[in-house]
Length: 255
Ligand code: 6PG
Image 1: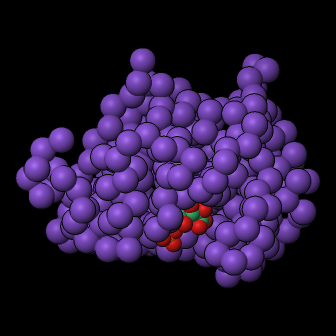
Image 2 (image 1 turned 180 degrees about the vertical axis):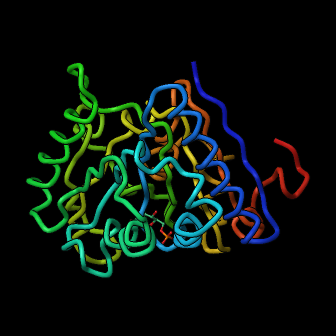
């Protein structure tokens, strides 16, 4: 069984981010009502910043059941938490620092460690968070971005390593943008187990990748975002018109 994919195209960025914030709050309330906890995997990068800024102020700040939120990261750059490139650091600065009380649980990837050690530590944290002998918790929502080359989290184009399907979290030391990536990432089986996945993709620079991922032939080695195919969960893409401009469905060509 394969989950459903929904693509929403926005002609204004504030509208896109409002819908993202509303969706996140809705899923948080639903998860807490049903299971007592909202397991949220966050992404780094610049695209989610306006969403995070919204979460840190009313009305969303007061609507989120923060004490029952368990925070995770889909990936992390191996830098200290106060480094400008740290994904934890970004969320900490934009959201956590503004909360009246800390969220229920924070499972941080230790970016200040060597990638292999941080991946091993995160693997243990995931198992602990899952309980009942499971290797990872089922995320209620995994927030994701996509790079212009189609990468997702820290899964980059190129041959897929065997560990991508056998481990929940792996160290990534391949070259990216001309230097070793030095990152830790969750792997496709973990993302594909999520109940909901929300991609935020904006800007003309991502148009080619978006069309290839959504409408091109399957080539997950070239377009890592194609590796995200939940068995049952819903994948929602919130994209702006610039990113969507190469989609056949936007140009009215069907498909
Ligand atoms: C990160 C994420 C990465 C990101 C994309 C998009 O950078 O932390 O690993 O997958 O979501 O590169 O980044 P932008 O949002 O900055 O375009």
